[in-house]
Length: 410
Image 1 (spheres, rainbow, N blue to C red):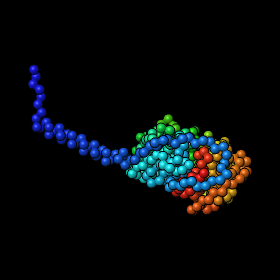
Image 2 (cartoon, one colour):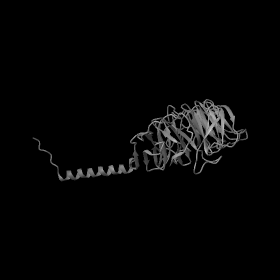
Image 3 (cartoon, helix red, strand yellow):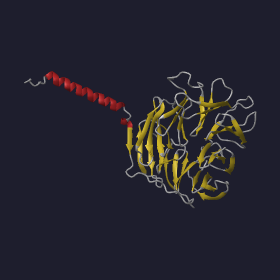
Image 4 (tube, rainbow, N blue to C red):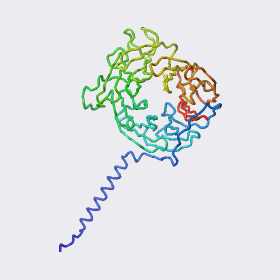
């Protein structure tokens, strides 16, 4: 028989040393890991889908309010109203504001947005706003995650198919599993040099549909802003596929203050301020970047103007009024004067925040059919130049984003 192996004192010392090294290594990994600075508390009872409102409430009173500095519009997902402030994203009962779930990280929150019935939260690390987590709206359960190279500040937007994260130098488009479908602009380590059509450009605004991404950019050595029409999901995400690109020069003169308003199908609407070549207007481009038509715009337009889509119309808040734009071709329709924000739909009606009330508007004709009084305490936007009050309906609950706060009305 072979004699059994016997452990020596050296064997024991070596084994202990290895165990200590493993514990130290595990501790270092934990100290440096994202999990160490993350709190994730899912809902004990997930939020229920909101029942469709059959009519607009006759009265609206404030039920709750909560800080939400990192959202630009009321965020709703999976039956929950969601706030994002500091490093914390909270799912709330829309009727009471009670916390249902919580996701928190020890890093700054760049923004949060609702997309695909989920919440997408973007945090900033040393590489910019590129730490991305997707959360189930009803329960707060973590879903997809990704890390990206990004600028230190980003604007988030979505079209129902894709989500765009745009900084001043770099833009990414993600699909519903957070896989990147396009990178545009600055590329720190390009695998394919020259894949980007231009370099050194400042990205000013953008919007998308399932088939087109429109980007307004200002590039070195050019006389005006440029609108570029792109494929949001080319074959190679690192090689943008550009359908067309057009300078917005106005009779050879520089024009500043333009903005992409919206994209629908393969059409893009761009606001062009007044210049030597004409007055302020909405310029509509086709899928290849060619100008199709223009609509004049009267009055001042605020730098904080905002567009939202509600069914078959886009609602454009200019700073003092709402102008409806037909989704098929961006033809302007009705106007609501004295608006404090772009509004939203509820029970087949269009609700527009106005001074001391919510105006109830027929979405087809623009006829005001009534007003629901609302007592808005605290600062409110001025008629022009202030931040808009943005709205969302969740069943018969009306949510209003007022500056850095989300307010629930019922």
